[in-house]
Amino acid sequence: MSINFQGKITTADIRKAVFLNYSPVYLGVNIALMALTAFAIIYLLATGSLAGNYALGLLFVLLVLATPFWQPFQTARAADRPGSLYYEPIRGVIDDTGISTDNAQGKTFLEWGEYTRHKAAREMLLLYKGRYCVNILTPALFASRQDWETCLSLVAEKVPARAARRKA
Image (cartoon, rainbow, N blue to C red; front, side):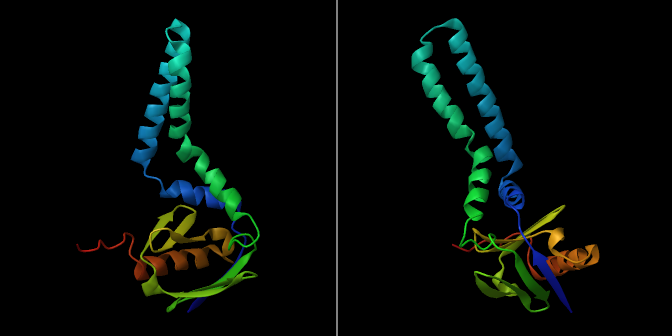
């Protein structure tokens, strides 16, 4: 059995993939800290007590806390440059031995055992080879919804959802 796929991974897909990697708790804590910092800036400016000294420092803290929200846009923009795997349309085959992918940049084949984990969302599949190397698959790459569903079930069977922990 083999499943063919082809198409383009868009910058919107890359942004979604980066957001999918974030923990909801991490994002929630960042939003809460951003709200607290924004409140502190407004309070200092409204009272006028040392507003100039503290407000600029808190503005910097606010920008640092906002990093998880603008970083996916930077990552997507960097991936949409010549030389990137996702700059050109990709095509490939998924079968019982692994996944082969090729485009104008080159060709790869990874056996199922080389993938350390996967993360499946409603309309996206991330396949990890190591901690940061990830392949992105979306339903738009497949000829039919049935091919997408078959891909998801094959990945669920062959690749663990969580990486195995290393022993010390």
